[in-house]
Length: 318
Length: 318
Image (cartoon, rainbow over all chains, first blue to last red):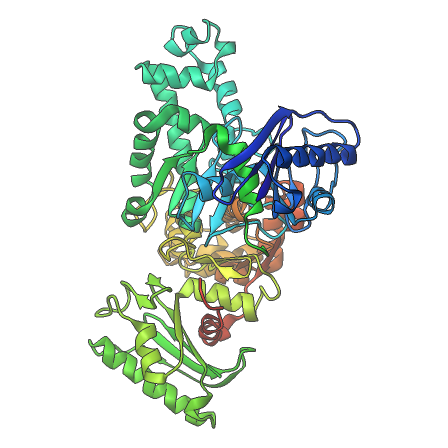
């Protein structure tokens, strides 16, 4: 039996489940920090024991622990390095602490990599050994799976597709660099840009209560779906930029499938996936474009539980 | 003992050597096609037997064969698909044919991947598990090694860094797409572009015999080294474009080391590698830039022999 933990900046999800990703018992609560990471992790250990009990399982039924963490980490050592959203947690040996307390192996991965593993094992990437997942959320996180294994890179920090440059000397990104894919297609950056150019009479702004400063990506997606010309134009540009980033990924890695999250899932097949495939047909060689599958993420609200399970189930070694 | 074969469009190199890459006997000759690929491969088998003999080795000393091939291939099946430079060779089962004839396992890889493996094992990438090699020759080929293994992609066609788009709707590439890294930094494309903009009085054009239409990358490199302003300006732009491509690679894969071939090797540390590192310091996050090593390819003329040996020495499986 597996223990999966998804530690976020604002909430934490714990779940006990099996290798097929079926949850037996789970808990979701706000993330409350005591100021002492040891106490915080010991609290998670107590909750995990409670969950096993709730599921009618002995502690000895537990075989592995997987943790999704909100920030840079070293999966080889199990240390969470410097999560921006967890004050007081710095260089925390998450895996070792949980493993010692519960007596089974524990692994950690950053949230985007954990989500990639979860989609690969339980969601839209099932059966595929070569996969790239892009969150397409407030930012553009991601994970690269090659030959069935997560690509960690030389120091555990691979999988930052959101910060591939797509425009020379382009827009400034929140990360400080210029021209990043995220500066064009990340939800926050796209929203901020659109607020400066949105025509007050566009249906998207009407949906934002008439205030361009209140415009959100979902307003643009809804307005585009209902036929608003401006919304369709800017969503088309979003797809152009995303297609350029995906083309770079395909040229380098040739994944069989690309899984796209949040904004793409909300926009759906007709508005997002079909026109994105058409754009890639002009940015890839014919055989690449024919073979590439681009699909929406499938796990939705079950992602936090499944992320921990998928991290736990990674093969040993890198 | 290993048999390494480098099949090129114009020449073929055969070598018998050991796992440390030391050649015991080798042969280099023009590639002559009979019109029958079976006869061509049988010719290589005879030559291989001759080389073993020349090296004073029994046929039974041979343990593995590795072949570098000039075009798309399927390393899993050992089939060379459609090499543009080998008329009459189409869907040729190179590995199976050589393996049957010589009685030992054989593997094939396309030339850029084979070169990446060779630099990783015997050259500038020794001791590094996460490596990207870019040929920087007439085109920009490459190979990606992640966690000690070549990344083949879903259908064996990964490792095309030269065709990552770096400029939206940019220059047309020889491959038919737009804005490819190769369209800006590949030797042929760069040369063709420079011929259209070279000032007749630049030192680079003087080195080309005074004719801009005869300008070659080496003239620009030599002129830049001797202080010509125009040559330094265009070489600086070449470095800008290359840096953008490398930044995308690092964000996605976080290699420990990037190995650059031909043009970069010719330009050297002061003209190419030092200013390239400076450009990457503004295109990567500080920790990434500090950790990344960018070095010249080291094998030079011994590459063809070593390429075959390195292909032969790949671990089993993917």
